[in-house]
Image (cartoon, rainbow, N blue to C red; front, side, top):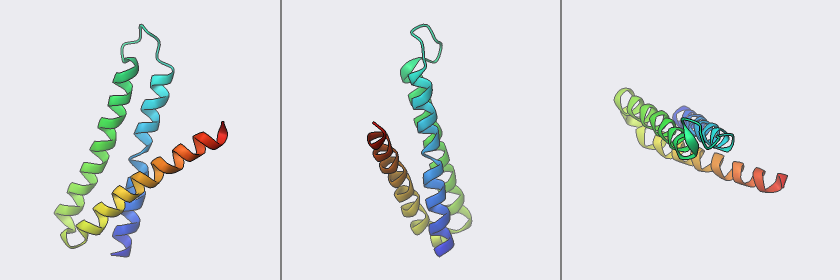
Amino acid sequence: MFVAILVGLVVGVGSFMPLIFGMNKARVATPTSNLGHAGSLLLGVLLSFVILGGAMAICAFFFRDVAIPFVLSEAAGLVAAAVAFGISKNVRK
C-alpha cells in the first residue's frame, strides 16, 4: 500500500504540470493566436484530467485492492503541488 500511495503522490504532482504549461501558454498568447488565452488553459485542464483519470483507471483495473489509497494520494499530490506553486509565486513577488 505504501508503494501505491507514493506512486499516487507522484502522479498527482505530475498531473499539475499541464496546468503550468497551459498557464504559460496563455501568458504569451497574442490576441490573434489560434489557441487563445482560454483555449490553452482549458487544454491544460483537459490534459491534467486525462492523466488523473487514466492513472486512476489503470490502478482500479489492475490493482483494485489499493485503488482508494492511490486515488486519495493522487488528489493530495495535486493539491500539494497547487499549494506549493501558489506559495512560490507569492514569495517570488
